[in-house]
Length: 313
Image (cartoon, rainbow, N blue to C red):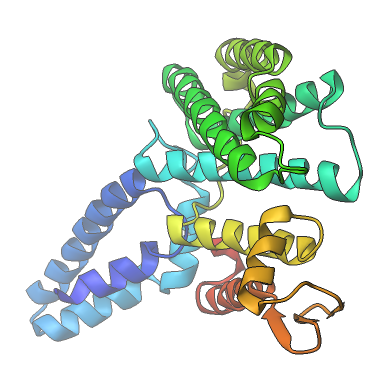
């Protein structure tokens, strides 16, 4: 690794700069540093001295890196989505979807089999993909293409996941045949024509707005920071674990059955706090989601301390 490579990586890495811009910037910075180095070599300095003085002349890595990111001509947006951005967008869509579904079904006691609920779910999911794509991509044609692809992928995955959920999670009472109890309810929710038509219509509306309106509106809006896939998945996992922790033990049939099978007895007493719960006075379940979330917050604080607040703004 050359004397400049470490310095250039320190300037560009961990600032949420997209990979396309990062490659171009690395080439430009190294080229400029080489010119400075050659000037010092022509003055008779050694190579090590020339490298050190060139870096000193160029500036402190954090201030230079944050300044570069905040003044990118692309506003830190992509020409097109990579696999990473597709995974992040789908992850955010499913996080919103499951958060609203669980909140309405368990905490708010909202009837999830109504037209209002179907349309509301369609709206928040489509709005999530709409905002994500328009914030990340700066090419209108690719915005439209990615909204279509992302929404189709979400629709297919959501149908598969929810079908499996209904099959494994709904309790069968009184020995009734599984096909008589689960499939009608599953078909009513998952393959409801109101939800499907609403999803298609709202997708078309988001495409029209994106193509004819959003390019002018979002042209100068910056994509401030690009999270890594690992950070995105860890954050979503922490939220899902927190939801499961809240649902344990009586609000989710599958979780209850798993706990009973592990303990070998029915659940008779539960006490909990933010960090852990105790079932039947001897079975302890930690709030894993909260622990993961705390670790992510600590990582964020360390990152800001190392790279400066400007690296995430």
